[in-house]
Length: 289
Image (cartoon, rainbow, N blue to C red; front, side):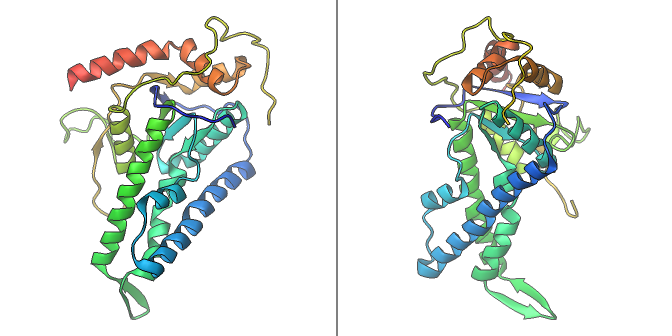
């Protein structure tokens, strides 16, 4: 893959996702398994090894372990319950040369990771066949891991050119509830954090070759051949700055444009005037804040 460097340039939310093409269950499971094994097993072994040696973990080195994928064109923010669709979407974009960072492939397995670390690190006692861990030490491990993970998610958003939010019933689970002042809500603190950061990060397109305007639909006949049991917190959906596209909008582009990589993103921007709309929405969001 061509080296990707830069800052977040624009974002949008995708509603009513539609698959571009058939992606096999085997391909999705392989993607999921590879991400999970790298995230949980290697990372747990690394942390436990560091604890055994000196009880101090280098946060910067840990971040590189958490995020083996250091570069991507797109950051995809979504509900863990939509992981299959998110991976399907990512695989379809990767067929078109667009590298996608699927956030749940990192934070979706934090619970498994914490269990492995606490089983080794936290004081524990056995009682009636049940293992009880030290509450204080478990909280310490969780707080440190969540802070580092959140910071790295923000870094990845800032480093990718395009931020996409999957707006579904799972990610926006509370619509205009009367108990809230205004707007929709999510039950995911990760989605809340990612949306909030995407609304505040710097917007800048790093110098790169651009697709000439006016040829988005060139070669339209061309087809790409490459292969909850407890109380929950409700977080504000911060999305005034994000234009909206439908699944049909993106599928239509995928069907007709021959471009790939950054040029595929350019074709998407031009087709729906995303650059102008994103800027206008950002200004409006600032005035309303």
